[in-house]
Image 1 (spheres, one colour):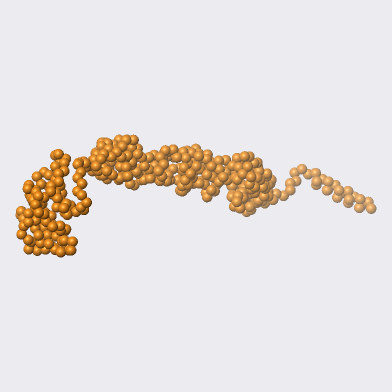
Image 2 (cartoon, one colour):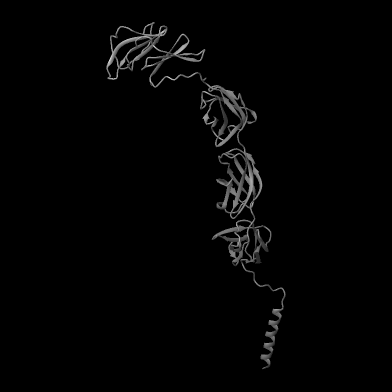
Length: 420
């Protein structure tokens, strides 16, 4: 009994002394432990929070968060070379208002990937895109533009660019920049550029430069005469430049491009609607889809002058010739002549004072000196005629000549060596 008591006392003494040793440590694990903390949510962002609860013996080579957005996992690595304890990541973009998201903290070592528990939060929104620079901030159709800033979102397919509410293609983009090309349009001036990143958007401006007509000389002329159109930016918005006089296209004969974007066009004036009167027409220049109108109109002078008119009756067939500085029109059916004196601007009817030929159509009508020959033709019965007549203006008489040695249904005439 005495020996049993001594053994129990020795055992109690050993146990007591072992539990009170301060420098005895529990064995360290190979891998670390990480904890996902509750997110800190504001109206424009959310802060993801993680905590390293045990480092482990294995070397840490990466850490951060795995964020689940629209069933897609987005990895945010915030690895640093210094020692870690608490770590966090601020998300400023791609957060939909009143939408619940899930995330996990992670630690990666050379051997292991350790995940914290999944934590959810409800977003209140995110930062709108911020424009810090637009280069260039003015240009033409086809100009390449790069907008730099922040909060353009992490998802490429949710970035959009609109110019005056017209969506344009993005050539290249990232979270802090967007590149695109100004599309062809009729617009000139400060265009509104709308940048959309997910549910957020912001506006900036780009000045679209258009053609400017500075002068047109002269501002009067006949159809076919030349004018010179001078201005700036007349060719930069398209491959073709056109100049209109009212609704008629002018013919560009020459183009000169000088310094400081100064351009001149030499243009032929087209015929106007009414060649018998002066016409005032607006002058428009079109380059690409852009159209600019000059401040003054161009006066196209009349190409024809109106003189005294003569009513020739109901006949529909006429022939005419000139003699001794006067004009003559013969009515084929009545065989009467109408004489026009351009000096007096007056018409006079000449009625034959002798017998006249029977009516035949398809006759050859040939003026020669003061005579007018009527050769052959067809009657109403389609009978061919071999008569030859001439009208002498000086005595107002029809005279019959010898018959023709031939007949014809239709023919032409010409003169050679004073013979017809």
